[in-house]
Length: 128
Image (cartoon, rainbow, N blue to C red; front, side, top):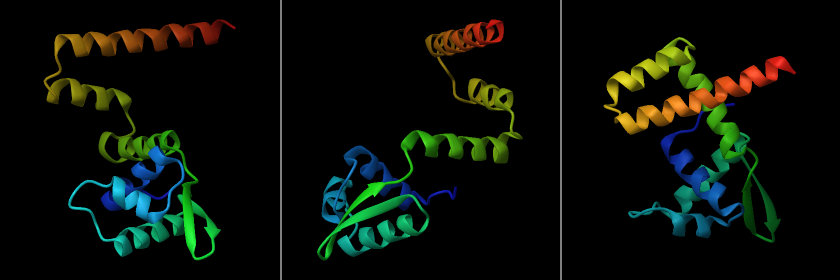
């Protein structure tokens, strides 16, 4: 799966939230200053060529919908990001964020709780 540019990502985010939309609907949901209709239309066609979007035709207008879910894109993006910047190591990623992001004690405790739940889940899976 190809990665998206910032502009492509902004448009697919709107499409994910709308589920289906015409170009004009997408333009209306973008923050100011909004890109021109033709710009959004061009980006939608690029997303279509990349396999992220398809459409249903209604005469000369098209209703676009995502072919790739937000979660699927997040998984692939994170895997690629992890590989490029952290040598495919979640441990390196967590270490970076815990050292660099000035996390509060509450945030660190929430992360520990989430990890604890995953450990328990993995233990349960291994005993089945």
